[in-house]
Image (cartoon, rainbow, N blue to C red; front, side, top):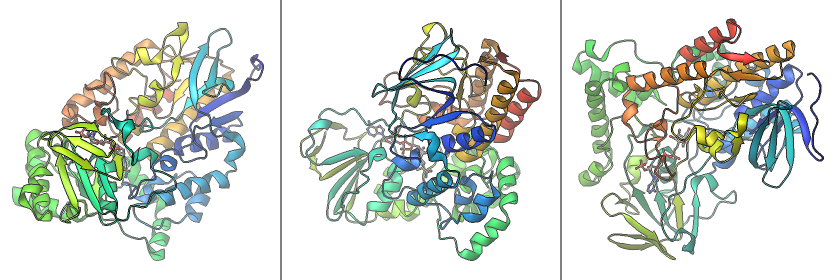
Length: 543
Ligand code: NAP
């Protein structure tokens, strides 16, 4: 690295500052070390893990096959680490991330308890100044964000929430010392992937469970089970094949779309195929289906009806079953929660469904929840109400670029990025899980590995050439935005009110669709970024 920029008193300087020590920040630090860069990771939590450090609610686990979630870069790690379940529970995943951290001795270049409040570009020194909430400051030539896609929780905004005298928390903040649930009256508000996992896990532990559902989701069975030592040995021997398969599928999973067209397969055969899909583990029924199910209204409606009938078979009370069937969107256009006996939970006498579209929540009281049909008292209220996805973690930091431009203002209408990595006007800022990148819509670590390998090659290129300033052109950014928009228009998910479209009524201004994610699939994204690099980083200016 060239001359070291001047720093203010007490300011700590590093060539690369990485924000976030989840799986993304961990891998980026490993790669930065490989190129001999001076790098520091700062993290708001007390330790590594990111989403797997924070989310400790009962039932929290992967929806991706465990052996496709781990990083693939090190044969040694692959040989040493054993997954014990096909879909790893949160404590095991957190252990895995700690194992990586220890193995590569990463903590010596990490600082914890660092909540970033601002990031300011300084043109004169071509550096970023980063300030923490506690007043500490850092300066770096390059700033790398690994903030997480779903790390800005959004509790609802009901009146009286602070008045409740029992325990209440967002699922992201489930106490590390978990409260006893035995015999307790518990309310869960929200039925997304998180709520569905919590409800299934605690239904038989609590006294009474009331589920406050706004809109039901299309859920499907996870079919998790233990991995035997023989299976783990087999998985280990097939890692190359597994990762190669993931690299070829749009979602980065071991499941890829069925090669046949929905329309060329006779109706009876489709039903038999779907019966098979429903019995398979993981996301096969979502991303291993006919492509048309996610793109064509008619195909989607037929599969949606198939899943509705499954719900009717599993929920004993026919009226209740109908309440658990979504009416406003088809299967798979929102993130599909995978579940373990979720629908069966509603067959229990202690589990009750409150449809808040019919009897809205009026306020949270000292003792519980007041709906339009009366008050119910609780010991614990769980807000499983989701996240200000993808841009939320950026919006919570005051980020200013060239000429004092605020990133939040620039993204107010819609996020603008180049490849999901760069933002014009914010030089030397590299986003590893930024809006309009591929990690948002795919098996996260697979896309992260691709992305981090690519940014690391870029850093090497920058260092080798002695460049001090890297910025995407406005043209390249506009073209990328057009491509991202065009892909949304091809998919039924464009109409859904979910985080895939950046929709969130708990955030001012986000009760509308935004072009938040890249929907072109991992192989297409990889090809695009490889082409950009091979051509000497088209769309990027270096100085
Ligand atoms: P979510 O999918 O956004 O679901 C939030 C839920 O809360 C929805 O049911 C929503 O209802 C409801 N809600 C929001 N605001 C509300 C309000 N003011 N009043 C009442 N209900 C409200 O959030 P999530 O369940 O936390 O999941 C987010 C994402 O995290 C998932 O899609 C997934 O990508 C990831 N995740 C992954 C795993 C895994 O890998 N296994 C597990 C959990 C989560 P509406 O639908 O009506 O808006």
